[in-house]
Length: 436
Ligand SMILES: Cc1cc2nc3c(=O)[nH]c(=O)nc-3n(C[C@H](O)[C@H](O)[C@H](O)COP(=O)(O)OP(=O)(O)OC[C@H]3O[C@@H](n4cnc5c(N)ncnc54)[C@H](O)[C@@H]3O)c2cc1C
Image (cartoon, rainbow, N blue to C red; front, side, top):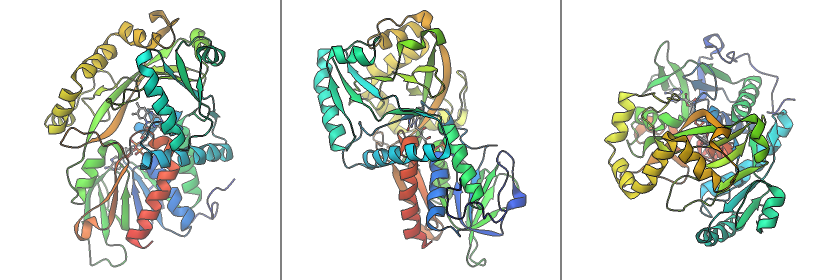
């Protein structure tokens, strides 16, 4: 079913997904979107929904879409529980989840709407659970309920807790499949999805009226556009520098390693099971996550990564490690969370410690039930003060070059859930700035 107005009437600009499609290039585009993660693809879709005739190209350095955060995450459709009321994250997560469920249904992308329990395992966590409940209500998260221990057991027979928050809207999806569906829609609507295009430079060529922005790839000819929207995830700060943007906030990569529950023990978990998050810490805490394919992942950990796009345990990039270590905010962040950081590192390295933590929620879990699983790397914007930027950040550049580029500088979790709503905000902003 065509999803975008004009779908099926494509102008033949499509580059085959998975292959560099220079044959499909127009001379000049109205908009170039940099990055074929879920945010870039959703932004491109939102722009085309508003302006079906727009000449639009998505430029991706990898050989396919969703090769980084979008394809290496927990696959949770978040409900919007955690985020400060009034923040973009709160608003766009609630709207984005609703849009995502509807999109997946229309496009036949499988989802599993299994709900989630946030479980207080100790008395000290009860006031924080209550505060989370109230925050969820303020954010407009539907269907929230506080459960007593007997109700917890009724929902999750293997989970134990003093009280839990039931959140029926949480689900699971494979974001790689959502991204593939978005890319197909774009192609059908006549956009070009050009893979193998690594943006290395941006220049203005005023002698080329109409589309004076030159996007210079690592190899091959430049591409011309009127304006660009950069959704470069783990490379967001470096891409922002290309248009004269500030070095801050810099991206600091945080590794997340998962464990997998052995299939014969998958019955231990029915829906998502999360601990009560510590508001002093930036991430949600290790959780038990049923995937849409029926497997169960545990984790992820949260430790500084030595490589931004490295998914092997020993992956190391001298450039990435050096940039992280000389960032003044990293030292401040490490000092502020020293004990928690060392605990995370211990659990990331020592499997029994990771299982012990999860056993607070599911006491039957044993070390023999789990095996090491895949990894992801989070792009997290960090201020020099050591403060992790909570909210989504969109920023234009300075000067005539910067004025033609809009950068997404921070799109941490739940940006996959929120992507379709983030796309709308980016489209609003791009239309306002660039007069599209
Ligand atoms: C471990 C982990 C678990 C998570 N769990 C969840 C979850 O359960 N639910 C949720 O909602 N969110 C989750 N997130 C967050 C979510 O995955 C991200 O917020 C979201 O995927 C961000 O999408 P993106 O498009 O901004 O970035 P990405 O998916 O990283 O895409 C950026 C793209 O830009 C491309 N690019 C970069 N530089 C260039 C260049 N110079 N030229 C061309 N292309 C370039 C990259 O190759 C990449 O394809 C998780 C993240 C991680 C890492």
